[in-house]
Length: 234
Ligand code: OAD
Image (cartoon, rainbow, N blue to C red):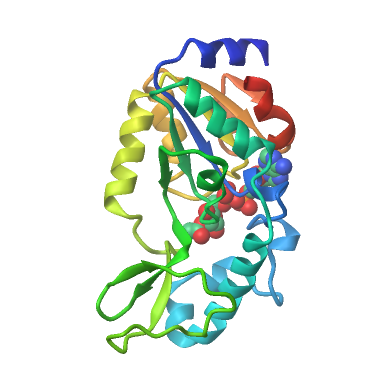
């Protein structure tokens, strides 16, 4: 921890890459943990364009369940510590796979949401994107143009928003320090950002109670919960 902390202190272009594990202690179920299941559906079976085409109401019911859960929780010490770290490091970029908005709620401002936001909807007809925090949401919500609205999140098999992924790769390519927190590191292209930072010569730290496919490229693995470990960087 001491070495990792010194590396962060000395960095000018630090990056944090976060996943569902960072929100786990807030009470948001992770995707691959057993509590991530809803009515026995796996996320891979619901978070797809095909599932939405077949049954938009079912997919929206799942998102409504997740939106409700997220609306009831608060940022935890890990989210808050990351927001504090940004304040002390002007070049800091936070890249998250989470769609819950908890990083922003905790005060982080330079946030790249790779997988979109659960609090936005997008029209499958005219493409209009807007914030919608209605709970429960009418399933499926309908746009003024008559098109069905979908969650503005990235599903399996879909491209990530181009501008966001470009910025994320740029940050990783220029990083001198990267903290990888609470991600299983199995979903691309998010996981490859750690490899990009490695190639750029960044110092890599992983914070996760479990080892992951990214563990092997880390300079330091700190096994433990994000809420216990990340505040130690302050
Ligand atoms: P996963 O559910 O795959 O992984 C969560 C990771 O967090 C695991 O490695 C856990 O060991 C770790 N973890 C659990 N509790 C933790 C804690 N308190 N502190 C730190 N780590 C903890 O979630 P992601 O890696 O975020 O994509 O999943 C990546 C993407 O796959 C998601 O964004 C989503 C999903 O399907 C899309 O929806 C496109």
